[in-house]
Image 1 (tube, rainbow, N blue to C red):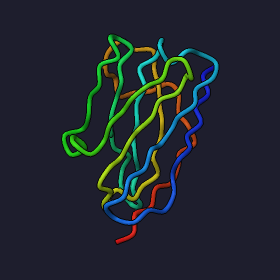
Image 2: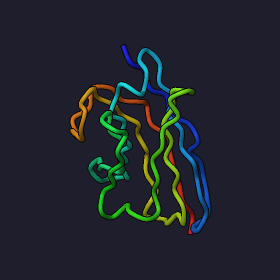
Image 3: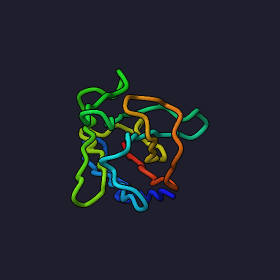
Length: 121
């Protein structure tokens, strides 16, 4: 069973940066496609970024391109999400997720508990 634990969230001023981390156990991240999603208050959960099992290619939601960077560290069995130039509208709970697909498939089998990111103006 894969377990995912996020960390790195917090309160930050607009314009600042955060690096979220997701530690996996139970399976090597190199054998998983890894994702970040987020859910803002009163809104549906939305896709942020993915790093695929195949070639570890990266994909981003169109609105996330440029400020968000997903990366993985196979040696540490972690996946990270770097967020720069934070905006108040980035306030959300950020979730790490995973599946065994080789390419992007938004339905994930494994989810973390989420980490809160709050951006003040």
